[in-house]
Every structure is written in C-alpha cells, then in structure tokens.
Image (cartoon, rainbow, N blue to C red; front, side, top):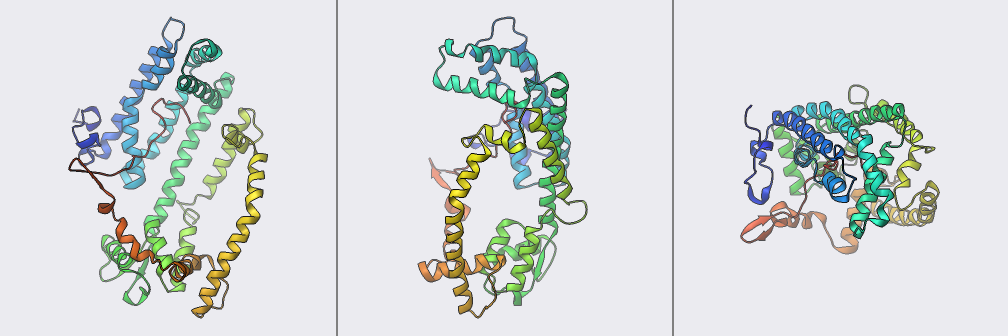
Length: 388
C-alpha cells in the first residue's frame, strides 16, 4: 500500500493536517479503515461480560473512532472550502456509507442495553455532573436514533438515514455547481462604484476562468456581497441577485427542488416512526424551545417589532435612493447598496476603507514567534459515530 498521511504521525506545526501531501485517493482507504477500526472498538465494549460501568462503556465510546474523526475533519473541511470533482465523487460515495456506519452503532442492541443499564442506575453511580450529563445525552441520542423501535422500524430508520445523507450531499453540491458554473462577465465600463479590492477579486476570477481583459463576478458570497454593496449599476445588481437567489433551482442536473421534496417526505416519515406528529416536533423536542407552540410565541413577540424596524430602515434607504434620483420602490438588490450609502452618511463609515484591516495576514496572531490563526476546522459528526 502506498503511503497514506492518515496512517502516519503528523509532525507539522501545531499538529495541523499536512494538506500538501493529502490527495483525494487517500480518503477512501482511510475512511474504510477508520470505520472498521471503530466497529472493532465498539465490539470490545459490547462484548464485555462485566456489568457496564461508566468507564468501560461511556468513556470507551468517547475514545472510539479517533481515526474516523481525524479523516472526517480533514475531508469535510476540504469539501467545504476547496472542493473539486474528485472530492465531490468521494462525498457522494461515502455519505451513505458513513450514515450506515453511524446507524449501525446507534441501533446496536447490545450497546444500547449497556447504556440503558447505566441510565437506569445513574442516580446510584456517584457520577460527577459532567459525567451524568454525558450519560444522559448518549441515552437520549440513541433513543432519538431509534434504539427503542422494532427490528423492522430500525431497518427503515437506517435506510432513511442513508438516503438523507445522500440527498443532503447532493443538495450542497448542486448549490456549489451553480455557484461555480455561473458568471457575470464585465468590462471596465461596468465597474462603477466597485472598490479596488472588489475589482481585483473580479479580475482574478476572470483570469482563473481563462477570460483575459475582462472581469468576472461569480456566485460565491465573497463576490456577491461586495458587488451588491458597491456597484452603482442597478441592472447588474439585479442580474446577480436573481442568479444568486436561484442557486439550485434551475432545470437540469443541479435542480434541488425534487431533492427538497424527498427530504421533507423522509424527515416526516422519520419523525412519525419515532412517535412525533411531524419533523418540527421531533427537531424541537431536544431544544430549549421544546414545542412548535413555544417557537410560534417567540416569533409572534418579535414579528411586529421586527417589521417596524424594517419599515424604518426601508424609509431611510428610500430617502437615500430618491436623493440619487431613483423613484422606484426599493428592491432586494438595492438593499445592501443603499444601506452602505446610509451608513456612510450617518456614521462616516465606509466598508471599503475598513476591509483592508481584516485581511488574513492582519488577523494572524503572533505567539512565540509563530503565526497562529484562531480558528477551528469544521467538525464532522462526532467520532462516536452516533447521530447528533
């Protein structure tokens, strides 16, 4: 087997992943080995003949899946920030496999039996507050995954989980494809209002797409928001806004509308299997709000004040628009543009002047002579393999 960075010790600064040596082909064998390894770790837990203890069950479960956690952190970080066709293919292939792996653990009757035994004796185990909380969360997580269902219902829950993982992956990739494939090509005469950094980014985007002598605005948020904020070309702002808000809704291979319908249907079935009337009831039951009624009360409390504030802001924007000669109603593609005008007039604050202070190099903090960026890699599902 060729060398795989995921099976080696990382000697990089601060233990960050060696991205320069990680290739797409490293992920499949790493995922396969990581899942196999975690199942072996779970088997040790469930194969114990001793009455379960917090240490040999909950702590052991927490320690399981470290390799899967390592591989997943890197993969999902790259998929979210620097994806390509190879990574997308791996994501489509492994989304259902990872979901199947998670559900295999979550629906393992022997594992649940041990956790349920501890849960029933939790008041007599002398656990610290954090240990008790962890035990309760694991028990609830398994129940919400279907641990109390019949054999047939568990099988259906596993199938739904696998399909939802595939659908969620396809949904995200469809949006990304629309962001990547669409472009607004501009020439020098169509850049009115754009600050230097936005022009430079558009020039670079065009260069990367092999378009010389022009500028390109893509549907990436980092390109869209500056254009909507600073471009004085209302027609171009409208074109960009409509394309941006239509991501994933175009006819063809990247149309998310049928995917949304299937996701809604499967979530509804999942909730009913667990005894809830609908997915919202299931989703909220493990939150502070608890019920649809509580959420509705909160929304009702803030709805009218929020609308009043929005009316005030719209009036200020319309006044700024009229001062520039626009007598039409403010449209969605006008909001950021005139909000920036109002901000400059009221607070003497120009976002274009502030932005250079927040480039990456200026956000890096120096510690012990080495640069440290205060950030955290995207966390995939917990290494325990259990659904959240």
